[in-house]
Image (cartoon, rainbow, N blue to C red; front, side, top):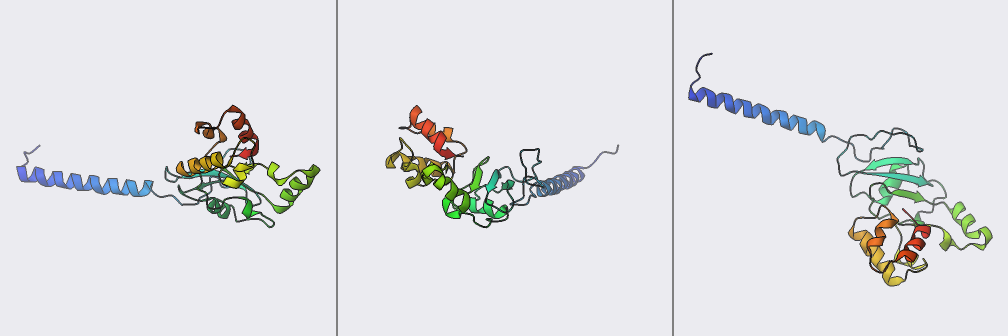
Length: 197
């Protein structure tokens, strides 16, 4: 192998570095591709297997159920709101009671968004004289007033729960509320029966 001059080594080194940078940029461009609001499965899952499409690691996967056009499991970008999940599931079905959920709440990974419908809400409220307050409240969208209806929760604790949820970008389970002061075992039991994730 012939000896290379110092200038030839510098030129070859610069070419090698340039090729590495171009290759790295091409690989990064391929890896960052991913459609936002892509469904987590080709068909909405009913508990079976599904494969997640590629997306950024900050995406959230949520289960959208109830009065929507296409209930199923969907992948949405981090920072998406409940209304984005409803829209991704084809929008509300006829008779959907969107006022019963907080459409502006941020989604968390693993969250279930349940859109109630007017018929089931009325039937639940009317059955055996049951009050509408017996219907489970969505943890992701519960208001201070709704939380205040739960036994053992007053307006101050309800406000703490909402602030904690907003501070942490949502809650994936009721068990996370155990970290709040003022919520003991009896209150946690009430929360488990009255709240849904």
